[in-house]
Length: 486
Image (cartoon, rainbow, N blue to C red; front, side):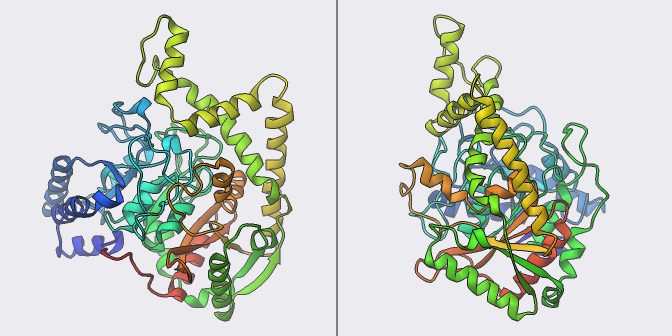
């Protein structure tokens, strides 16, 4: 039961919050032993919150139409009274003393934050293989990865363990796992959603967003968590928009009003598998047949996006993760002196991928290399943003692949970090530019029978247009299957 259907059932008294929560608890008990999306789930706490929601409804004081609906939370988004380990041994036992703004906004509407969902450690990865605690499996094939870093959120929603979840997206960490697991993943415009309470990876790139089974649910969650926040100076003071209404009013006919751009660089990229190309080409043909105008566009600096991203992101990660030293934050390893304690704590607490990125970031920020790497990367980032601005002069929406391949098997890329980094080749530029984008399931791969998503990209702050286009495509596509057993 997704958010929209659950809200309707709750409001019609066809189901109670207690029943929804019991179903989630049963789902996790029955199926998460294979998927392993959840790091923690406090069943008694959920039952208590559900009982409170049902009491509010019985008294005519429901906080909103969504009061009582459980929502999964990625393990880097803090929830008061819950651990927030970021899937790292360093923060394994740290309990959050406050709610992130996104979670606080959900609670204000009566949504029930549900458990802690697995991820790549500190959101650094594209496969969910970098968690310090467990490997999450793709619900379509337990031998394949769910994507990353929001792999636990994607797998939990894809396996229908929870109606929806929150993830975070720094370079594709919502959209890529959404594509791999056959769900919808929305990366909002930078500043649309407060980052307060999101444990920082790369502060100029990070953004919280919804992971759902439908575009309508993505709009519901986006509307719930959006807005300016005094705790986050990068959050934007914007007029309220009704994203839900925009989606509910969308029809296939809306495609006739759209100019959809196909970036040349994305469709001629090396390494794209035949079945991904086939699926994206088929989606383009369907959209064109429905009346959309297809126009070619160019994003010439796309070829630098991966290099620019892995300079800027690692530099910011190096600075952000300096606080986790076993003294201010994190598990401490005692040693003969303070410096030795720092080394021991960080050496034991951080995983290999996190260490690699800290080293890269520290190097590009070091004396003599700052101008050559970090400063130059920021200049190229500006060129990448201008490419998008120029492209949107000739089209309304861009359509691209989400990932160059379907979900790969465990261990297939983990021995080669560069090959893993190239998994994000179609998603990274969007974060560098700060625009909004969404992954929507397109079809199952012709060879693998694994989900393949199509990515729609819109200008900054054009979420209403983006969601409406995504919903029109969703209606054109028709029902998308769930994995077996779900």
